[in-house]
Image (cartoon, rainbow, N blue to C red):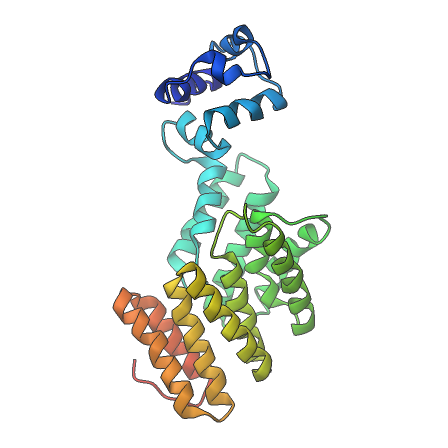
Length: 292
């Protein structure tokens, strides 16, 4: 059951013990606001933003209450997309892809379509072990996003899931611009993990292209960022990737030390699937043979 806008505004206002006069403020008369609560008038955009500010509530919180404290449709899809941390979460990615497919049967939406394409790209790379099958999905997303004047939270999250499919120079150019946008909107970015996720992906991209000095620089940036935001599963990956860089730069002893740090964090936090994915990554990108 979805409540009407006025019903939700009244419910929130009363729960905060605010009067109609207080919420109306200098933006409108109390009588006008009363009509909005009674569902006899739709507020203008300006009045609506004023009401949200006076009620100390976000638009996302309002719609969540409006739908009986549940997420559904596009809101649920975007929420689930922002909950993805790593491309190894194949079950979550497949589930999200299925939700996108179902939603798009009856709705036309660019963002949901892009999320579906991102899911298909990640699923392709997981099963085919090659970028070739994933690249068309990444290009489809990039064809739309590259034409936009600015990127916000959802676009930045999408780009982080595709930029590494492109050639190194193109990928780094895209990621560099994205990191600048993240810094510009740092106070309102929806996902605090986003910057560290970009840094992790840039690091592995440089490793795969054997640019080890660049990879080392970004691994250290990632470690600092993950410590700053207390993102411990990201810190585990950052340590593991710094360790791989050190090994490939002929510093096996120090490299193994960092790898063991990363794997130890996975064990302490019970991140078994991440642990296994990191061990597999080490096997593929170094000459070290670790016990699983």
